[in-house]
Amino acid sequence: MAKKKNKKVLNIVSIIIGIISLILMLVFSYAIYKLNMIPGKFLIPAYILIFIIYTGLLLTVFLPKVKSKIKVISIVVLVLFGVIFGFADKYIFTTLNFMDILDRDILQKERYDVYVLENSSYNKLEDLKGKKVGLYQSSNSEKAGSELKNKVNFEIIEYTDVEKMFESLNNDEINAIIISSSVKNLLDTELNDINVKIKSIYNFKISIEKNDIVKVVNVTNTPFNVYIAGGDGYGSIDYTFNTDVNMVATINPTTRKILLTSIPRDYYVNLVGQGPNAYDKLTHAGYYGIEESVKTVENLLDTDINYYVKINFSTIEGIVDAIGGVDVYSEYEFTASDGTYSYVKGYQHLDGKKALRFARERKSFATGDVQRVKNQQKVVEAMINKITSSTALISSYDRILDSVSENLDTNMPSKDISRLVKMQLNDMRGWTIESQNAVGTGQMGPTYTFPTLNLYTMLPDKDSVNSLKLKINEYLGK
Image (tube, rainbow, N blue to C red):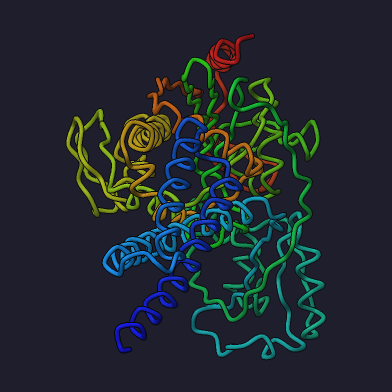
């Protein structure tokens, strides 16, 4: 009697486990199909094998007359498969969620802060009621000022000269200032000789209209351009930022060749969206949104940018660490100007922080920003080589997704990303990577964004730019 009862319990348990395992397997099969990244030559045999295995296992657990020993073995195997498919489902749905994030219409934002002198008694926005607050005129400053005036009633004093505004604050002619993160960055870098110490007592974000631009092609058989915009900070990728990295990747999927074209951040170019006379540093195009940067680069190189990718410091550090570091070649032996890391001439293995510092360094080199863009290319090339020529794409897949999910923005449709991954997984062929960079002559003078300041810019060398255009067209098959 006890034996029959045990058999009955075993049958019930086996059926329950069989159903759960079957559900997990079906969810996995559907998710893999929806993801559309696994090549058919792998997927179809896998489906057939899974079907055969599960048919045999389910027959043994569903049929009551099967011997208990066989049933127990089938239960163990189904539990094992269930665990495997359960974890696989987690990773696949994480990927699908990541794709949804990439497809979302991210609203660009610009951060503004209200600053007062460091030794000021003002500690919150309400302290400025009835006071004089300086506002530097820029593309979104009027919107920023209006938003704050709805919270606290103060007098806005507008400035077109950012240096004059800081002097007024230092001389107590105004009580506070409202500036964007871009202007604060300018104070910390090119205007660091201004002797003013400030503290933020309030910050807020202004939404910027996003007129997304994309020129869709079949990425598996048609050459295309991707503009890589590297921001000069950490944190949310939704913010507008200076573009320290300005690189165009011309990708030919049929020849498996990639051309990396770098443009110095200080290149003196026309900001197309601001008018025919709006000449400025390329990095300042980022103040007006990623679309302005794309249009400006298109105009300079006389080529279409099909897609863009926005990244920042967090992105680079995260990806490099996720894939276990990269091997980067340095043309020089040097120590970073901030004293953090030293680099030898030749190849060295770098983690995320060291790779980022390597890509940012310019003061250690006689050619300054020209060498920096070369080093940026070397880091990008090392990352591409690591991901495409080893098992890093598979073994580090979840870590890569975790590292970029909040630190990457692109207008490349997720279906095109899936196609590229599927193409790479299909044969794991390596890519040939070539680099080129623009050069020019340094000069000092005003810019469109900061017309009252005497800033360093680089006047483009026409022969250099023409050479870049020819090489890009060669890769595009024109």
